[in-house]
Image (cartoon, rainbow, N blue to C red; front, top):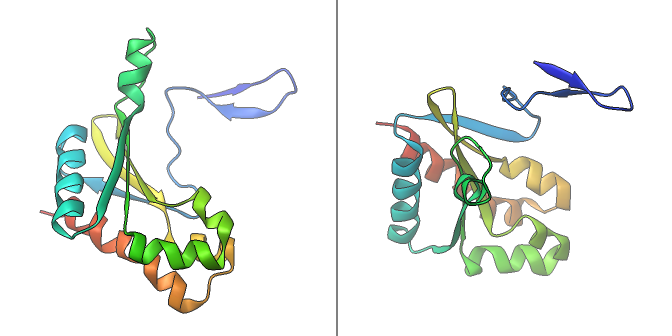
Length: 146
């Protein structure tokens, strides 16, 4: 479903979820949104990383009397990994700590995040610094398999 705004631009309707967006990795989770958030939170802690926040967008929408599919963002990372990135590229703080969106899309739980390569390119990071962001792939693999 698409709609046109007053300027004639086409945009997706509220019920439609984009299938792919350049630079964003999306994986399917065999668990519910809540179970996936719990699994990611536990894994982050187990790996010695810092769980900075879980933002419950759908819960806040509901509290405001609005409907939103289950939508939560988990923010996590390691100051040991992220600080050198931000020292080299201060604007990288806009994307750190790392963020994983866990959301419901037509009875399927999805796990989405900005790819490490996209972040490295965005901030012109050297390979050594880019490698500090790559752990997000393994962490999300761990919660989306089994």
